[in-house]
Image (tube, rainbow, N blue to C red; front, side, top):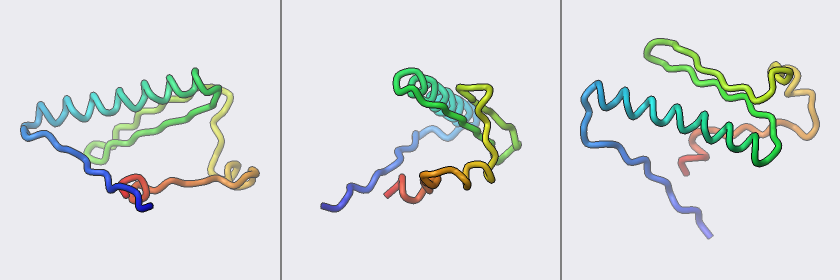
Length: 90
């Protein structure tokens, strides 16, 4: 069974203010979902968002003692599974 292609709906208004508000809502929603997931599923989550247009970085870390580097993640078993954006959009 083929998976259904996901479409990202965009708002009609493209003013700078509405774009900023939408971006802020989506960012806040991601952080809220990460917080809920770590509480309900007993998981450690690190979420980092970097805005391309001004290089602002936002970070959520559910456990201050858990912030592994890329090298540490590569040595763990089971191996790290990366999810690419094109797989999410498919």
